[in-house]
Image (cartoon, rainbow over all chains, first blue to last red; front, side):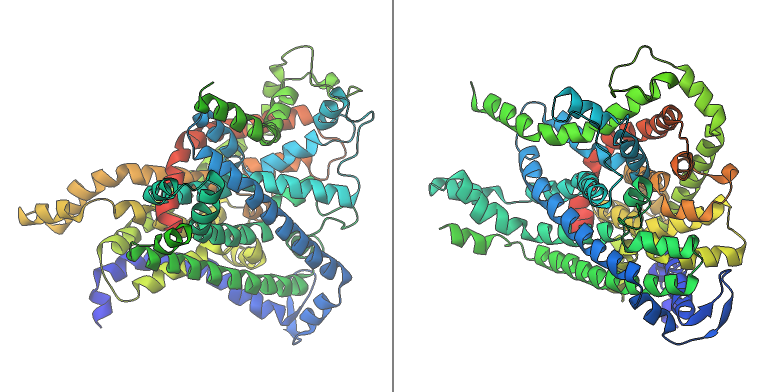
Length: 305
Length: 276
């Protein structure tokens, strides 16, 4: 067999085996388990078809978590994009203290989500939290607010923290995109008397579209899967009021011992994730192919003229 | 005023609300970590406090077993990074230097694995580690972190390797050097900076990971820093917040400084690696 004599084959093999095993085996195991009746202690008691899936779909907590996951993902991703684009546009231009500004904006990225969430949990404390201290000092509120005691308020706060920690990564993608834009397009536009808004609307925005797509898809994947913020700040509470799919899944698997149901949810989430991943792969590969022929900006130039 | 000065003021003003929100948790961390215990719950809440209580850090170190958690975090992050590099370097080299069948397919496979998040697989991984008897062992994390970081490592390395001119190695071969010599004497020295940057990002990823560590590590002696800090907060009636914040401060600030310093490489890696 010629493939066994091929050098790149042997160079790639170890990386393939490790990832395939660590990611492939759990998927097989979850698929199998999700079709079994499982005892509280993880013992398989025999095939029971799609019973676990039926139970999951009839579970009101699952349905509520699924809806909340949708709200969580859409709000965090939209909020992140809306803030990150102007931030990246500003950071891409020359102004005093730009280096410092960039470091500050990127800071949340360097710290584990767990630690950030722990600090916010204390900062939002209903009695002694320093957010309350700040708001009382500037006279916005007279009394401390219990930020994490009611589900709606807690979930809103968690969404805002989610946006905050997603901005650095998203801005970085946009900055990478902005630095690759062809400068001659802007010169041509200026010669033709285009205003700054027109330059943004007809050059920057269309050329940034591939990066926008990638930022949206990657953020959807990350936010959809993000456990630490909600797990640390409220653990899905009060009364399951801030549970999203991942926190609910984690509770089922490691607190309530409902392994069968938890496997079914894991697998369903895996398929959702897989669809978004294929979308991402398709976007990346399409960009790479575009990169081969150099004239990405041509059509957009014509729009300006 | 020059246009640049005007722009500077405008931009800083526009970004200031965001920056305040970003810096707020750091303020909370500092102020609480140094605050005397009896001033934690004063009413009305306030930022000010009477003295810098350095003793908080000393007490915290013993009480939460910080040293052990630090050692565990270092062990897991360093070993998994080395494993990822050891396996990732040959793969990245093959992808940047050889043309072969299935190369595109393999890169797509890597992208897919990069997007697979531990949380979706965590139950299956836990059962896998039970099977191997690795639950509660830091080594369970070494293998999983290395696997989950491989895609990133290979993509990042490959994009840097491709910028090292192939002609250098070919010239060495023409001068009579063997493939092995040209690899170790010409290519690897040039690739060291790229490997260092990639290693540090992999290290930070492992250092910050939460879900797998929370699941696999079951006793206090094996906790990494993230799980240790979480354990001080979760399900406790009384939380010693000054200790928690002191621990968070010690665990995060060195990594934050390292990351800030390397952040420009990330922009570059992102531009050529992940996106382009």
